[in-house]
Amino acid sequence: MKHVVVITGAPGTGKTTVRNYLTQKYSMSKILTHTTRPKRQGEIDGVDYYFETNESFDQNHFLEHVEYDDKKYGSSIEGLQRAWKENDWAAVVLDTKGAISYLQQKPAETLILYLETSNQKKQAQRLASRGDSSVLIKKRLASQEAKRDLKLPQELHQKAHLLLNDDWEQTKHYLDAWLVKAGWQVSVDQTSAK
Ligand SMILES: Nc1ncnc2c1ncn2[C@@H]1O[C@H](COP(=O)(O)OP(=O)(O)OP(=O)(O)O)[C@@H](O)[C@H]1O
Ligand SMILES: Nc1nc2c(ncn2[C@@H]2O[C@H](COP(=O)(O)O)[C@@H](O)[C@H]2O)c(=O)[nH]1
Image (cartoon, rainbow, N blue to C red; front, side, top):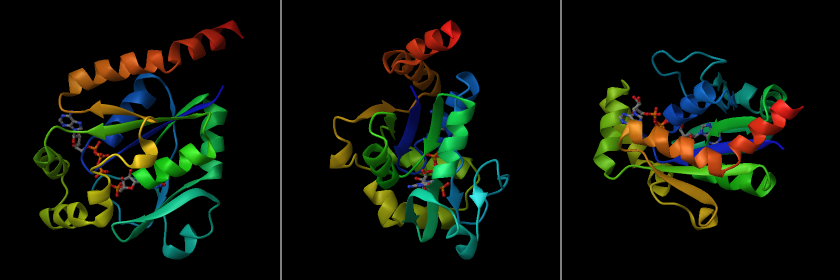
């Protein structure tokens, strides 16, 4: 059985950090997505994203794509197939609109984690600690998509698992426990029985 863990939530809630934990500790495959936004400091093409021009972006076969903060983002069908070839479990970071699309298109395989923090100031502080400029942080948090993603959309009620990411040590415990409930152990047993 294939699974895809979709990690969603507002900016700075820790989506990429959670995705890295799942790929490192659980060897889940990372689904790389495509974007036309400029690279942040330290980001590498083919590692963090496929960085595209407007023209090259349109040449992909997208499972879903969106505009977020005036830039294009999309996850390709090939990216998901590549990830599932490596491992039955894959992880991807998406905005909430992308999470809804995944749920509609892959209902049996999709598991959704919606990340929150107890206080929104924390999210801006985290973006600053990541090295984002204050101008970009202001623009990002003022975008209609970022404001929308502060709230779990109706379509994800009863579908998403809510995860409070205030304390990282505690978040790791939550994730470990959630994965057992989500069937991770079953999958490991099945793999070793092959
Ligand atoms: N629980 C935590 N406690 C403290 N810092 C954290 C925690 N989780 C993540 N961070 C830090 O917050 C910053 C933002 O995290 P991350 O890049 O994972 O957020 P994101 O939700 O993917 O953001 P964006 O949507 O803007 O890409 C990073 O510097 C990360 O190390
Ligand atoms: N629907 C999609 N959302 C995506 C995709 N790749 C990333 N994202 C989301 O966009 C915002 C902004 O990302 P950032 O790296 O510029 O901070 C964030 O919510 C990501 O989760 C995608 O392919 N589809």
